[in-house]
Image (cartoon, rainbow, N blue to C red; front, side):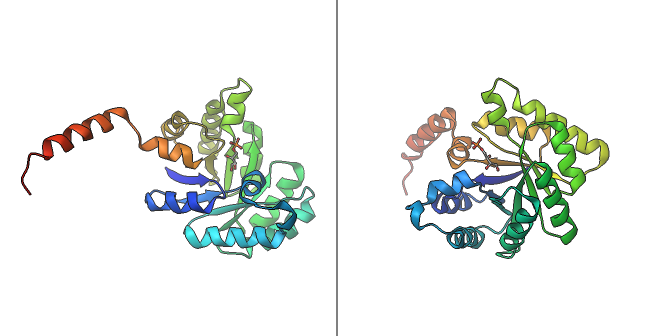
Amino acid sequence: MKFFIDTANLDEIHAARELGVLDGVTTNPSLIAKIVGDPANFTYQDFKDHISRICDIVDGPVSAEVTTLKAQEMIIEGEDLAAIHDNVVVKCPLTIDGLQAIRHFSEKGIRTNATLVFSPNQALLAAKAGASYVSPFVGRLDDISTEGMTLVEQIVSIYRNYGYMTEVIVASVRHPQHVVDSALIGADIATIPFSVIRQLVNHPLTDLGLKKFMEDASVMKK
Ligand code: E4P
């Protein structure tokens, strides 16, 4: 399974890369808004420069989301974003216009990530339109008392039934159990906030065991 980091924070991306387990990055307008100092001075060019900096850090897919709603506008914006770097993946919402844009990008060889996916039918449409990635948002479904992981199971099984090549990115990951479940189901990717990536490392028995090993090792003469 591949690990993406779900952030636009360059320090977090650097730190995750240092762990040696990072395969890519996903961003969205809300994550970009978090890194903006003064919104009055943040331009579209600043956004593109920021995506370019992320691409310099990680040699893997970097999702950059369109910020327009009409297919034609998404196409113009997405082509512009794709021109930043070969690793840029254009993230489009799962709407009628988003599907039209995904189909266009697919025909032009531009990779896409269908985002804000909350149902198996939306995922089926994304695959049929030629999306490279589909992002079911498990945490947001859990938030409304709907089992997010059931959606991932359904999508993985539907894609297997028909041999769709669209890769499943488990998104809106909130805790380590989401990562375990994603791996058990066989999702291709989990995009994980940095705080959760750090949690994956921790286990109290590892800490206890290491403390004892260090104490016992201290009797050795060096
Ligand atoms: C996916 O690509 C999104 O950026 C992200 O996972 C959304 O997560 P959230 O529900 O925590 O905002």
